[in-house]
Image (cartoon, rainbow, N blue to C red; front, side, top):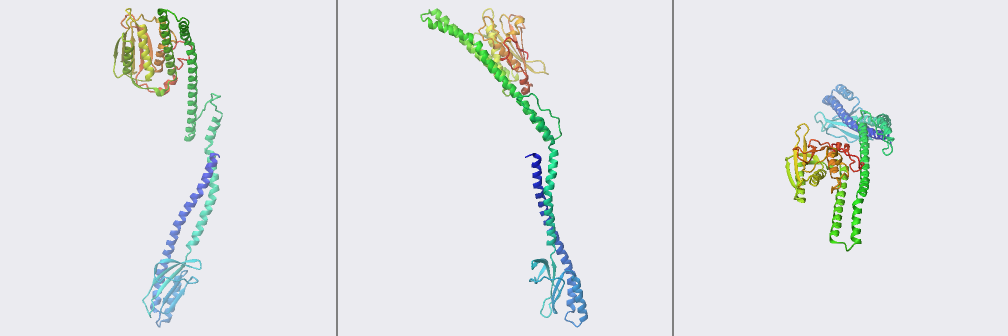
Amino acid sequence: MKLSTRIALAVGASVPLLVLASGWLMVHLVTGDLRAHQDDQLRARATVVAKNAKAYLDVAGTDHTILQQVRRRRLANSARDVGVRLTGPGGTIVAGPQPDPLPTLPHSAPDPVTLTSDGKDWMVLSLRVGAAKEGTTPNLWLLSPDTAEDELSLVRRRVLTGALLAAPLSGVTAWAVAVRAVLPLRRLQRRTSGLDPRTSPARLEHSPTRVAEVDDLAYTVQTVLARYDEQVARTGEALATARAFASTASHELRTPLMSMRTNLDILTDHPDLGAADRAGVLDDLGHEHARLLGLLVMLKALAQGDLIEADAFTSLDLAELVDASVSDLRRTHPEADLSVHAAAGVQVHGWEQGLRSAVDNLLTNAWTHGRAKDGVARIEVTLAPAGDPHQPAAVLTVDDHGPGIPPERREEIFQRFRRGPDSPGSGLGLTLVAQQVALHRGRITVRDRADGRPGTRFEVLLPATTVRDVEHTVPLLRRDWLTSTAGEPPDPRA
Protein backbone atom coordinates (compact mmCIF):
# COMPACT_ATOMS: atom_id res chain seq x y z
CA MET A 1 0.00 0.00 0.00
CA LYS A 2 1.37 3.41 -0.94
CA LEU A 3 2.30 5.91 1.72
CA SER A 4 -0.23 8.44 0.37
CA THR A 5 -3.00 5.82 0.62
CA ARG A 6 -1.96 4.95 4.17
CA ILE A 7 -2.04 8.61 5.15
CA ALA A 8 -5.46 9.10 3.50
CA LEU A 9 -6.93 6.08 5.32
CA ALA A 10 -5.42 7.13 8.62
CA VAL A 11 -6.74 10.69 8.32
CA GLY A 12 -10.12 9.49 6.98
CA ALA A 13 -10.51 7.23 10.02
CA SER A 14 -9.14 9.59 12.65
CA VAL A 15 -10.88 12.82 11.62
CA PRO A 16 -14.44 11.43 12.10
CA LEU A 17 -13.41 10.10 15.49
CA LEU A 18 -12.07 13.50 16.42
CA VAL A 19 -15.29 15.14 15.15
CA LEU A 20 -17.39 12.71 17.21
CA ALA A 21 -15.24 13.26 20.29
CA SER A 22 -15.40 17.03 19.98
CA GLY A 23 -19.16 16.78 19.21
CA TRP A 24 -19.74 14.69 22.31
CA LEU A 25 -17.89 17.27 24.38
CA MET A 26 -19.90 20.06 22.78
CA VAL A 27 -23.21 18.26 23.42
CA HIS A 28 -22.19 17.73 27.03
CA LEU A 29 -21.38 21.42 27.47
CA VAL A 30 -24.51 22.56 25.60
CA THR A 31 -26.66 20.25 27.74
CA GLY A 32 -25.39 21.86 30.89
CA ASP A 33 -25.88 25.35 29.48
CA LEU A 34 -29.46 24.64 28.32
CA ARG A 35 -30.43 23.07 31.64
CA ALA A 36 -29.01 26.02 33.55
CA HIS A 37 -30.77 28.48 31.20
CA GLN A 38 -34.13 26.71 31.63
CA ASP A 39 -33.73 26.65 35.39
CA ASP A 40 -32.93 30.36 35.46
CA GLN A 41 -35.93 31.18 33.26
CA LEU A 42 -38.26 29.09 35.43
CA ARG A 43 -36.98 30.73 38.63
CA ALA A 44 -37.40 34.20 37.10
CA ARG A 45 -40.98 33.39 36.04
CA ALA A 46 -41.69 31.90 39.49
CA THR A 47 -40.76 35.22 41.11
CA VAL A 48 -43.41 37.07 39.12
CA VAL A 49 -46.06 34.36 39.42
CA ALA A 50 -45.50 33.96 43.19
CA LYS A 51 -46.07 37.68 43.68
CA ASN A 52 -49.38 37.54 41.80
CA ALA A 53 -50.34 34.32 43.63
CA LYS A 54 -49.84 36.01 47.01
CA ALA A 55 -51.90 38.97 45.84
CA TYR A 56 -54.73 36.65 44.84
CA LEU A 57 -54.59 34.68 48.08
CA ASP A 58 -54.85 37.91 50.05
CA VAL A 59 -58.38 38.57 48.67
CA ALA A 60 -59.45 34.96 48.17
CA GLY A 61 -62.50 34.08 50.37
CA THR A 62 -63.47 37.78 50.94
CA ASP A 63 -66.42 39.77 49.68
CA HIS A 64 -64.30 41.51 47.03
CA THR A 65 -65.50 39.38 44.15
CA ILE A 66 -64.43 41.74 41.41
CA LEU A 67 -60.96 42.15 42.93
CA GLN A 68 -60.61 38.36 43.17
CA GLN A 69 -61.45 38.00 39.49
CA VAL A 70 -58.95 40.71 38.48
CA ARG A 71 -56.13 39.23 40.53
CA ARG A 72 -56.94 35.71 39.34
CA ARG A 73 -56.83 36.87 35.71
CA ARG A 74 -53.53 38.65 36.41
CA LEU A 75 -52.16 35.43 37.89
CA ALA A 76 -53.14 33.43 34.80
CA ASN A 77 -51.72 36.05 32.44
CA SER A 78 -48.38 36.18 34.27
CA ALA A 79 -47.78 32.51 33.54
CA ARG A 80 -47.93 32.87 29.73
CA ASP A 81 -46.33 29.67 28.29
CA VAL A 82 -45.67 28.21 31.74
CA GLY A 83 -48.27 26.03 33.43
CA VAL A 84 -49.48 27.18 36.87
CA ARG A 85 -51.25 25.23 39.59
CA LEU A 86 -52.22 27.01 42.82
CA THR A 87 -53.97 25.34 45.74
CA GLY A 88 -55.71 27.59 48.23
CA PRO A 89 -58.88 28.13 50.24
CA GLY A 90 -60.97 28.51 47.14
CA GLY A 91 -59.73 25.29 45.44
CA THR A 92 -57.10 24.73 42.78
CA ILE A 93 -56.39 27.29 40.10
CA VAL A 94 -54.98 25.83 36.84
CA ALA A 95 -53.59 27.94 34.02
CA GLY A 96 -51.26 27.39 31.09
CA PRO A 97 -50.03 24.04 29.64
CA GLN A 98 -50.35 21.02 31.91
CA PRO A 99 -49.02 17.47 31.62
CA ASP A 100 -51.60 14.79 30.84
CA PRO A 101 -51.88 12.64 32.81
CA LEU A 102 -50.78 14.74 35.75
CA PRO A 103 -47.85 13.10 37.61
CA THR A 104 -47.40 13.29 41.33
CA LEU A 105 -46.17 16.81 42.02
CA PRO A 106 -43.58 17.50 44.72
CA HIS A 107 -44.73 19.71 47.61
CA SER A 108 -41.31 21.19 48.27
CA ALA A 109 -38.93 21.69 45.31
CA PRO A 110 -37.22 25.10 45.48
CA ASP A 111 -34.99 23.91 42.60
CA PRO A 112 -36.53 22.71 39.33
CA VAL A 113 -36.96 18.95 39.01
CA THR A 114 -37.76 16.84 35.96
CA LEU A 115 -40.94 14.75 35.77
CA THR A 116 -42.06 12.52 32.91
CA SER A 117 -45.63 12.26 31.67
CA ASP A 118 -46.64 10.22 28.65
CA GLY A 119 -43.01 10.06 27.46
CA LYS A 120 -42.49 13.80 27.67
CA ASP A 121 -40.28 15.59 30.22
CA TRP A 122 -41.55 18.54 32.27
CA MET A 123 -39.63 20.97 34.48
CA VAL A 124 -41.46 21.49 37.80
CA LEU A 125 -40.82 24.12 40.48
CA SER A 126 -42.78 24.02 43.78
CA LEU A 127 -43.17 27.04 46.12
CA ARG A 128 -45.04 27.68 49.34
CA VAL A 129 -46.97 30.96 49.08
CA GLY A 130 -49.20 32.74 51.61
CA ALA A 131 -50.29 31.61 55.05
CA ALA A 132 -52.39 28.58 55.88
CA LYS A 133 -56.15 29.28 55.80
CA GLU A 134 -59.17 27.10 56.53
CA GLY A 135 -56.94 24.10 57.17
CA THR A 136 -55.13 24.29 53.84
CA THR A 137 -51.52 25.28 53.03
CA PRO A 138 -51.32 27.19 49.74
CA ASN A 139 -48.79 25.76 47.29
CA LEU A 140 -47.72 27.01 43.87
CA TRP A 141 -46.38 24.80 41.06
CA LEU A 142 -44.86 26.05 37.85
CA LEU A 143 -44.66 23.50 35.03
CA SER A 144 -42.66 24.00 31.81
CA PRO A 145 -42.16 21.56 28.92
CA ASP A 146 -38.53 20.42 28.68
CA THR A 147 -37.47 21.68 25.23
CA ALA A 148 -33.71 21.10 25.81
CA GLU A 149 -33.89 17.52 24.61
CA ASP A 150 -35.23 18.57 21.21
CA GLU A 151 -32.43 21.07 20.80
CA LEU A 152 -29.85 18.50 21.92
CA SER A 153 -31.20 15.96 19.44
CA LEU A 154 -30.72 18.53 16.69
CA VAL A 155 -27.14 19.15 17.81
CA ARG A 156 -26.42 15.39 17.88
CA ARG A 157 -27.74 15.01 14.33
CA ARG A 158 -25.55 17.87 13.18
CA VAL A 159 -22.45 16.32 14.81
CA LEU A 160 -23.15 12.93 13.27
CA THR A 161 -23.69 14.50 9.85
CA GLY A 162 -20.42 16.39 10.18
CA ALA A 163 -18.56 13.20 11.11
CA LEU A 164 -20.01 11.32 8.13
CA LEU A 165 -19.06 14.12 5.77
CA ALA A 166 -15.62 14.53 7.34
CA ALA A 167 -14.58 10.93 6.60
CA PRO A 168 -14.54 11.10 2.77
CA LEU A 169 -13.61 14.78 2.59
CA SER A 170 -10.68 14.46 4.98
CA GLY A 171 -9.54 11.24 3.28
CA VAL A 172 -9.52 12.81 -0.19
CA THR A 173 -7.85 15.98 1.09
CA ALA A 174 -5.21 14.00 2.98
CA TRP A 175 -4.56 11.83 -0.08
CA ALA A 176 -4.06 14.89 -2.28
CA VAL A 177 -1.73 16.52 0.25
CA ALA A 178 0.19 13.26 0.83
CA VAL A 179 0.66 12.68 -2.92
CA ARG A 180 2.18 16.13 -3.15
CA ALA A 181 4.27 15.64 -0.02
CA VAL A 182 5.79 12.30 -1.11
CA LEU A 183 6.89 13.56 -4.53
CA PRO A 184 10.50 14.09 -3.26
CA LEU A 185 10.47 10.51 -1.96
CA ARG A 186 9.25 9.17 -5.30
CA ARG A 187 11.95 11.13 -7.14
CA LEU A 188 14.55 9.73 -4.74
CA GLN A 189 13.15 6.23 -5.31
CA ARG A 190 13.44 6.64 -9.09
CA ARG A 191 17.04 7.82 -8.78
CA THR A 192 18.02 4.93 -6.52
CA SER A 193 16.05 2.17 -8.29
CA GLY A 194 18.62 1.89 -11.09
CA LEU A 195 21.63 1.74 -8.80
CA ASP A 196 23.25 -1.69 -8.58
CA PRO A 197 26.56 -1.61 -6.70
CA ARG A 198 27.47 -5.04 -8.11
CA THR A 199 27.24 -4.06 -11.78
CA SER A 200 27.61 -0.27 -12.00
CA PRO A 201 29.93 2.29 -10.43
CA ALA A 202 27.16 4.92 -10.57
CA ARG A 203 26.18 6.31 -7.20
CA LEU A 204 23.35 8.48 -5.87
CA GLU A 205 23.58 12.17 -6.71
CA HIS A 206 21.17 14.03 -4.45
CA SER A 207 20.34 17.72 -4.30
CA PRO A 208 18.87 18.96 -0.99
CA THR A 209 15.07 19.16 -1.08
CA ARG A 210 14.64 21.01 2.25
CA VAL A 211 12.52 18.06 3.37
CA ALA A 212 14.42 16.70 6.35
CA GLU A 213 13.23 13.08 6.04
CA VAL A 214 14.05 12.91 2.32
CA ASP A 215 17.50 14.46 2.73
CA ASP A 216 18.27 12.20 5.69
CA LEU A 217 17.19 9.13 3.70
CA ALA A 218 19.34 10.19 0.74
CA TYR A 219 22.31 10.71 3.04
CA THR A 220 21.72 7.26 4.54
CA VAL A 221 21.61 5.67 1.08
CA GLN A 222 24.83 7.45 0.11
CA THR A 223 26.47 6.28 3.33
CA VAL A 224 25.34 2.70 2.74
CA LEU A 225 26.71 2.73 -0.81
CA ALA A 226 29.98 4.26 0.37
CA ARG A 227 30.34 1.60 3.04
CA TYR A 228 29.48 -1.05 0.49
CA ASP A 229 32.25 0.25 -1.76
CA GLU A 230 34.66 0.31 1.16
CA GLN A 231 33.79 -3.22 2.22
CA VAL A 232 34.07 -4.47 -1.37
CA ALA A 233 37.50 -2.87 -1.60
CA ARG A 234 38.57 -4.33 1.74
CA THR A 235 37.23 -7.75 0.70
CA GLY A 236 39.19 -7.48 -2.52
CA GLU A 237 42.29 -6.54 -0.54
CA ALA A 238 41.76 -9.49 1.78
CA LEU A 239 41.38 -11.90 -1.14
CA ALA A 240 44.41 -10.44 -2.91
CA THR A 241 46.42 -10.70 0.31
CA ALA A 242 45.35 -14.30 0.83
CA ARG A 243 46.26 -15.20 -2.75
CA ALA A 244 49.55 -13.34 -2.50
CA PHE A 245 50.33 -15.04 0.79
CA ALA A 246 49.71 -18.45 -0.74
CA SER A 247 51.62 -17.64 -3.92
CA THR A 248 54.57 -16.01 -2.16
CA ALA A 249 54.72 -18.70 0.50
CA SER A 250 54.71 -21.49 -2.09
CA HIS A 251 57.41 -19.73 -4.11
CA GLU A 252 59.69 -18.67 -1.29
CA LEU A 253 59.30 -21.84 0.76
CA ARG A 254 60.18 -24.08 -2.15
CA THR A 255 63.94 -23.51 -1.80
CA PRO A 256 64.29 -24.24 1.95
CA LEU A 257 61.91 -27.18 1.70
CA MET A 258 63.85 -28.67 -1.23
CA SER A 259 67.09 -28.16 0.69
CA MET A 260 65.59 -29.87 3.73
CA ARG A 261 64.35 -32.71 1.50
CA THR A 262 67.88 -33.13 0.10
CA ASN A 263 69.41 -33.28 3.56
CA LEU A 264 66.80 -35.81 4.68
CA ASP A 265 67.54 -37.94 1.61
CA ILE A 266 71.24 -37.85 2.47
CA LEU A 267 70.54 -39.01 6.03
CA THR A 268 68.21 -41.72 4.74
CA ASP A 269 70.45 -43.01 1.93
CA HIS A 270 73.67 -42.94 3.95
CA PRO A 271 73.01 -44.39 7.38
CA ASP A 272 76.75 -44.89 7.89
CA LEU A 273 77.55 -41.22 7.28
CA GLY A 274 80.43 -39.95 9.36
CA ALA A 275 79.81 -37.97 12.52
CA ALA A 276 81.25 -34.75 11.11
CA ASP A 277 79.22 -35.00 7.90
CA ARG A 278 76.08 -35.93 9.81
CA ALA A 279 76.57 -32.93 12.09
CA GLY A 280 76.96 -30.67 9.04
CA VAL A 281 73.79 -32.03 7.47
CA LEU A 282 71.82 -31.59 10.71
CA ASP A 283 73.17 -28.08 11.13
CA ASP A 284 72.04 -27.26 7.61
CA LEU A 285 68.63 -28.73 8.40
CA GLY A 286 68.31 -26.57 11.48
CA HIS A 287 69.34 -23.50 9.53
CA GLU A 288 66.76 -24.11 6.81
CA HIS A 289 64.11 -24.87 9.40
CA ALA A 290 64.78 -21.58 11.20
CA ARG A 291 64.70 -19.75 7.88
CA LEU A 292 61.40 -21.43 7.05
CA LEU A 293 59.81 -20.41 10.35
CA GLY A 294 61.12 -16.87 10.06
CA LEU A 295 59.74 -16.55 6.54
CA LEU A 296 56.29 -17.74 7.62
CA VAL A 297 56.27 -15.36 10.60
CA MET A 298 57.25 -12.40 8.40
CA LEU A 299 54.67 -13.22 5.72
CA LYS A 300 51.98 -13.44 8.38
CA ALA A 301 53.03 -10.09 9.86
CA LEU A 302 52.97 -8.42 6.43
CA ALA A 303 49.50 -9.86 5.74
CA GLN A 304 48.24 -8.57 9.09
CA GLY A 305 49.58 -5.10 8.31
CA ASP A 306 47.77 -5.09 4.96
CA LEU A 307 44.47 -6.03 6.63
CA ILE A 308 44.64 -4.06 9.88
CA GLU A 309 41.55 -2.04 10.83
CA ALA A 310 41.29 1.31 12.59
CA ASP A 311 39.88 -0.13 15.83
CA ALA A 312 43.24 -1.84 16.52
CA PHE A 313 44.90 1.56 17.11
CA THR A 314 45.24 2.77 20.69
CA SER A 315 47.29 5.28 22.66
CA LEU A 316 50.72 3.79 23.44
CA ASP A 317 53.72 4.71 25.54
CA LEU A 318 56.50 4.24 22.99
CA ALA A 319 59.20 4.25 25.68
CA GLU A 320 57.70 1.17 27.33
CA LEU A 321 57.46 -0.60 23.97
CA VAL A 322 61.12 0.14 23.14
CA ASP A 323 62.24 -1.04 26.59
CA ALA A 324 60.36 -4.32 26.10
CA SER A 325 62.01 -4.93 22.70
CA VAL A 326 65.47 -4.16 24.08
CA SER A 327 64.86 -6.51 27.03
CA ASP A 328 63.89 -9.35 24.66
CA LEU A 329 67.02 -8.83 22.55
CA ARG A 330 69.22 -8.85 25.66
CA ARG A 331 67.59 -12.07 26.83
CA THR A 332 68.00 -13.87 23.50
CA HIS A 333 71.43 -12.40 22.69
CA PRO A 334 73.19 -11.65 25.98
CA GLU A 335 76.48 -11.02 24.17
CA ALA A 336 75.06 -7.90 22.47
CA ASP A 337 76.13 -4.51 23.80
CA LEU A 338 73.02 -2.31 23.97
CA SER A 339 72.62 1.20 25.31
CA VAL A 340 69.21 2.83 25.58
CA HIS A 341 68.27 6.50 26.04
CA ALA A 342 64.48 6.69 25.98
CA ALA A 343 62.55 9.74 27.15
CA ALA A 344 59.58 8.82 29.33
CA GLY A 345 56.01 9.67 28.38
CA VAL A 346 56.40 9.69 24.59
CA GLN A 347 52.87 8.85 23.46
CA VAL A 348 51.80 7.73 19.98
CA HIS A 349 48.50 6.52 18.58
CA GLY A 350 49.23 3.20 16.94
CA TRP A 351 48.89 -0.54 16.60
CA GLU A 352 50.91 -2.04 19.43
CA GLN A 353 51.67 -5.39 17.75
CA GLY A 354 52.77 -3.71 14.52
CA LEU A 355 55.02 -1.14 16.23
CA ARG A 356 56.53 -3.82 18.43
CA SER A 357 57.40 -5.99 15.39
CA ALA A 358 58.94 -2.94 13.67
CA VAL A 359 61.19 -2.14 16.66
CA ASP A 360 62.10 -5.84 17.08
CA ASN A 361 63.15 -6.08 13.43
CA LEU A 362 65.20 -2.89 13.62
CA LEU A 363 67.10 -4.26 16.62
CA THR A 364 67.49 -7.71 15.03
CA ASN A 365 68.78 -6.11 11.83
CA ALA A 366 71.32 -4.08 13.83
CA TRP A 367 72.42 -7.19 15.75
CA THR A 368 72.76 -9.22 12.53
CA HIS A 369 74.42 -6.73 10.21
CA GLY A 370 75.84 -4.05 12.52
CA ARG A 371 78.72 -5.86 14.19
CA ALA A 372 82.02 -4.10 14.67
CA LYS A 373 85.30 -5.51 13.42
CA ASP A 374 85.81 -7.32 16.73
CA GLY A 375 82.56 -9.24 16.15
CA VAL A 376 80.60 -7.53 18.95
CA ALA A 377 77.18 -6.06 18.11
CA ARG A 378 77.11 -2.58 19.67
CA ILE A 379 73.71 -0.92 19.36
CA GLU A 380 72.61 2.50 20.58
CA VAL A 381 68.84 3.12 20.82
CA THR A 382 67.52 6.64 21.36
CA LEU A 383 63.90 7.80 21.76
CA ALA A 384 62.98 11.45 22.16
CA PRO A 385 60.19 13.85 21.21
CA ALA A 386 60.69 15.95 18.09
CA GLY A 387 61.62 19.59 18.55
CA ASP A 388 58.73 21.09 16.52
CA PRO A 389 55.88 22.06 18.92
CA HIS A 390 53.46 22.61 16.02
CA GLN A 391 53.83 19.03 14.76
CA PRO A 392 54.51 16.84 17.81
CA ALA A 393 56.25 13.60 16.90
CA ALA A 394 58.46 10.88 18.36
CA VAL A 395 61.93 10.17 16.94
CA LEU A 396 63.41 6.68 17.33
CA THR A 397 67.00 6.09 16.19
CA VAL A 398 68.91 2.79 16.08
CA ASP A 399 72.70 3.09 15.52
CA ASP A 400 75.05 0.17 14.89
CA HIS A 401 78.81 -0.19 14.29
CA GLY A 402 78.67 -2.33 11.17
CA PRO A 403 80.18 -1.66 7.73
CA GLY A 404 77.28 0.63 6.81
CA ILE A 405 74.95 0.70 3.79
CA PRO A 406 75.98 2.42 0.55
CA PRO A 407 73.66 5.33 -0.37
CA GLU A 408 72.60 3.67 -3.64
CA ARG A 409 71.26 0.65 -1.70
CA ARG A 410 69.43 2.49 1.06
CA GLU A 411 66.11 2.41 -0.77
CA GLU A 412 66.19 -1.15 -2.06
CA ILE A 413 66.83 -2.70 1.36
CA PHE A 414 63.11 -2.16 2.10
CA GLN A 415 62.03 -4.29 -0.86
CA ARG A 416 60.73 -7.77 -0.26
CA PHE A 417 63.20 -10.66 -0.22
CA ARG A 418 66.23 -8.39 -0.69
CA ARG A 419 68.93 -10.23 1.25
CA GLY A 420 72.64 -9.90 1.34
CA PRO A 421 74.75 -12.88 0.31
CA ASP A 422 75.58 -13.75 3.91
CA SER A 423 72.21 -12.75 5.44
CA PRO A 424 70.53 -15.45 7.52
CA GLY A 425 67.18 -13.67 7.45
CA SER A 426 64.14 -13.93 5.24
CA GLY A 427 64.57 -10.62 3.44
CA LEU A 428 61.29 -9.32 4.91
CA GLY A 429 62.36 -7.74 8.19
CA LEU A 430 63.01 -4.22 6.88
CA THR A 431 60.00 -4.51 4.55
CA LEU A 432 57.88 -5.08 7.63
CA VAL A 433 59.49 -2.05 9.32
CA ALA A 434 58.71 0.15 6.31
CA GLN A 435 55.13 -1.14 6.20
CA GLN A 436 54.47 -0.30 9.84
CA VAL A 437 56.07 3.13 9.60
CA ALA A 438 53.89 3.95 6.58
CA LEU A 439 50.79 2.54 8.31
CA HIS A 440 51.39 4.92 11.23
CA ARG A 441 51.86 7.95 8.95
CA GLY A 442 55.52 8.07 9.83
CA ARG A 443 58.83 8.29 7.97
CA ILE A 444 61.96 6.16 8.04
CA THR A 445 65.37 7.22 6.76
CA VAL A 446 68.73 5.45 6.50
CA ARG A 447 71.90 7.46 6.92
CA ASP A 448 75.44 7.30 8.28
CA ARG A 449 76.10 7.63 11.98
CA ALA A 450 76.04 11.20 13.26
CA ASP A 451 79.47 10.89 14.93
CA GLY A 452 81.22 9.99 11.66
CA ARG A 453 82.23 6.53 12.83
CA PRO A 454 81.48 3.44 10.69
CA GLY A 455 77.96 2.17 11.00
CA THR A 456 74.35 2.82 10.02
CA ARG A 457 71.59 4.89 11.59
CA PHE A 458 67.91 4.04 11.11
CA GLU A 459 65.75 7.03 12.07
CA VAL A 460 61.98 6.61 12.49
CA LEU A 461 59.68 9.64 12.86
CA LEU A 462 56.14 8.89 14.16
CA PRO A 463 53.32 11.41 14.75
CA ALA A 464 52.40 11.90 18.40
CA THR A 465 48.95 11.40 19.93
CA THR A 466 47.48 14.49 18.23
CA VAL A 467 46.87 12.33 15.12
CA ARG A 468 43.53 10.67 15.98
CA ASP A 469 41.64 10.44 12.71
CA VAL A 470 42.69 6.85 12.09
CA GLU A 471 39.35 5.85 10.52
CA HIS A 472 40.04 8.15 7.55
CA THR A 473 43.82 7.84 7.28
CA VAL A 474 44.11 4.04 7.34
CA PRO A 475 42.11 3.40 4.10
CA LEU A 476 44.19 6.04 2.27
CA LEU A 477 47.51 4.42 3.07
CA ARG A 478 49.31 1.90 0.96
CA ARG A 479 47.89 -1.56 1.75
CA ASP A 480 49.74 -3.76 -0.78
CA TRP A 481 53.06 -4.57 0.87
CA LEU A 482 52.41 -8.28 0.41
CA THR A 483 50.51 -8.16 -2.89
CA SER A 484 52.71 -5.76 -4.88
CA THR A 485 55.30 -6.97 -7.35
CA ALA A 486 58.40 -8.22 -5.58
CA GLY A 487 60.66 -5.98 -7.58
CA GLU A 488 58.65 -2.81 -6.89
CA PRO A 489 60.35 -0.72 -4.24
CA PRO A 490 58.02 0.36 -1.42
CA ASP A 491 57.93 3.93 -0.21
CA PRO A 492 59.12 3.84 3.39
CA ARG A 493 58.35 7.57 3.78
CA ALA A 494 54.61 6.94 3.01
